[in-house]
Length: 368
Image 1 (cartoon, rainbow, N blue to C red):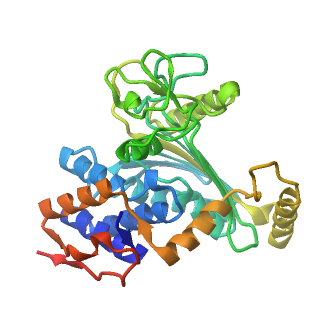
Image 2 (image 1 turned 45 degrees about the vertical axis):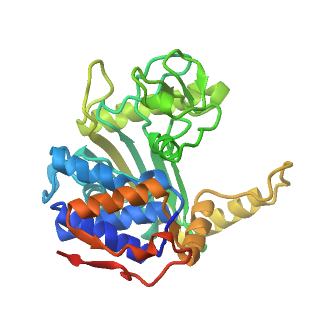
């Protein structure tokens, strides 16, 4: 498993996206977000998505060089059409617009439709938290990407419909929650399938409705389904998923899950609250710090060494991977090498088996 410094990995992806036709901004933003997802341990939304994105560009599903369009706007609301552009780019544009409105009005709700895969939602909510806002983002797939069975059911009827909430904490990292409303996002199943590893029990069922730990069952024809978050109380995850599908899909105009084959095209609802309109920022920090300390003071059960608050595991993992590098599974690395060869981005062969990260751009040459 090759190991990379984050900066060099980001440059590899940037050059690949440029060669595939992306603009310099699209390539920079998308490569940074994918690497950051891998950096915090969310590999399912990280570097392994590169091949998928390039294939989507080739197929015309992902449009390059487009600018998002605001099609309706008021003081605290707006509707943005992403024009099938990179989700990381149009998502940041949408969040920036919501933050501008919240700064002026105290709160804002902006929707996005016609977006390619939006990636890790925390990338957007953390934008808000960095400016001392509370950010809330929920995403559906516009009626496509149906991969989750409703609680107690067999057939796929919903997408994984994730949501994220982030808030400033006054500490070394912001508080951030970023979860799918299924037990796991499809990308984690894909990641395990690529590594020929089983999925944990309770994640999915096969086409006959039987519990399965074989990720290949999900991708078979007919395929199985992911289960809603909550296990024996999965009606909670199902309920969250249903409401996110409605709010992100209907309010944006992207559409909700419905019969028939529908190509995934993300719809999103982004809500931003200005903390300072409710109480002084320092008081909010005090509330956050007291809450964190109180929760962490609880004795742990056997098998649990420590209590983590939302965002803490990702913060620590990012610190570790900055020191030790980001490891790619062999299949992802080979796919990147093949893609680079097809796009005439030259990579040096020598670092593929190294154990420690080398200086950024140590083996990435210019486009040829």
